[in-house]
Amino acid sequence: MSRQRISLRTELPLLAWLVILWGALWRDFSPANLVFGALVALVVTRLFYLPPVELSGRFNVLHAARYAVVFVGQVVAASLQLLWLALTKGPAVRSAVIAVPLRSHADLMVTATGHVISLVPGSLVVDVDRANATLYVHYIDVDDAAGAERRRREVLAAEAELIRIMGTREELELLREEERMVGAADRGKAGSR
Amino acid sequence: MTLDPSALDTVLTWVAGILMVAGSALSLSAAVGLLRFPDLITRMHAATKPQVLGSLLLLTAVGLQLRSWALVPLALVAWIFQLLTVPVSAHMVGRAGYRTKHLKDARLSVDELEDVVARLEREHAARRPGSGGADDGGADGERAGAPMLREDGS
Picture 1 (spheres, chains in turn yellow, orange):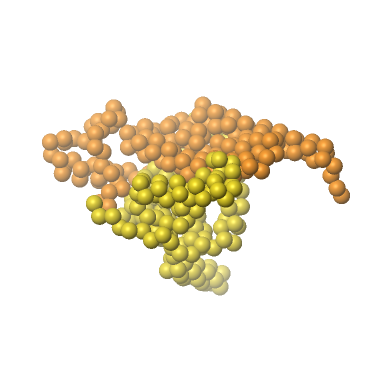
Picture 2: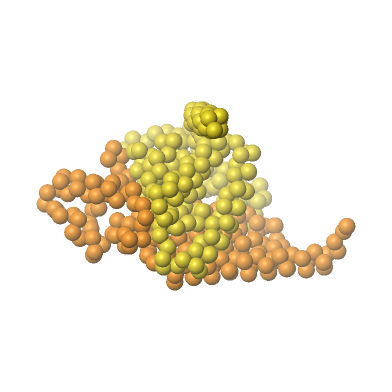
């Protein structure tokens, strides 16, 4: 087994998180406790080796804050919708398993998109095709192919948000390109009418 | 306008109370969903998701009621771990449920995974001629070595 050495810089977010976790669990953020927490974090990351998470190197805090609010709103709306569905449709509800090929092939991006999709009630990742970066998502309350298409676009929209927050520059560039094309198509449609 | 401490106290207690009732209502909605939905995966939706929001509301209520800043990071960590683990458990149960055919097919309007799984199972059976007939054991749900979609290059 070959162990790829990780630079301290790549490991820094993980270490910082572990130190914060240590402080939170002790409910004590005094410097002495944090220093000891840092020591524990170093020992733990040396002993229990994990493959490094490949970060893209950019993180847009503004987008992240905005999306966090949007996301909580989605969770609230979907929770109420699910309750309504349970009360009204119940056993007669129809669902669908939808294949969604994602734009990004990065593991972190596929995982993050899957997490966000799973956290919004009403959708659940049933399977992942890692080689093709395709999520198979189970959606509740989908009656036909048009509904499935709408849900597919929802997943892609969630991925687009995540790319804006922490995708690589190439992914962001691709996304902008795509949006320009969609915008041009819309204008074309409006012009022909 | 300045609030005297006792008025602030009352307001915080009321907010905490409302949050607790709302959080419990979400747990109730999970229970209703469990009773009403037809199959494993739709029940998974009801059982796992509203409770993420419910736990956030309850943790906020506890934080407001105890009024201790030291508790905030702890509650935040508890919620972050909820966010990280709930999708994983939902995915594992959902995936196992799909592969062992605990879904009522008539309830699916669109299924784009079916063909992929069927193809992988055929390939898997072809590679291991001894095991043969991988498709007949759907009902017992104990198909050893079901092919992994996640394998690289598959």
